[in-house]
Length: 115
Image 1 (cartoon, helix red, strand yellow):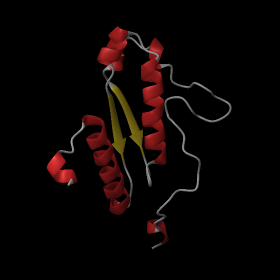
Image 2 (cartoon, one colour):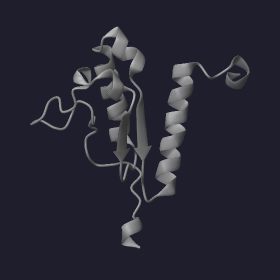
Image 3 (tube, rainbow, N blue to C red):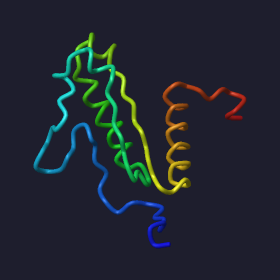
């Protein structure tokens, strides 16, 4: 079935939905101008996510935007990302990568698990 062709790695450059919509729009989403009530309800949908390059680029872009926020806004920001793909293996791989990143960030690996 040609609609189910699986590519293990995408062919386009990674982009951030937060701060990189290409050369014509340098800063499409100005998170620092959003009110506190909106910052806790950010939601993004990535359809046909594949290798999640744009998701990871967007996580990086969100962190760059986070660094420029006031203290009050930093305490309120929360983002939800929904990943969709027709290939379950792509989603499984992406989920494994996100879980590994979470363990690195939260220090979720204990000494016994790493030995």
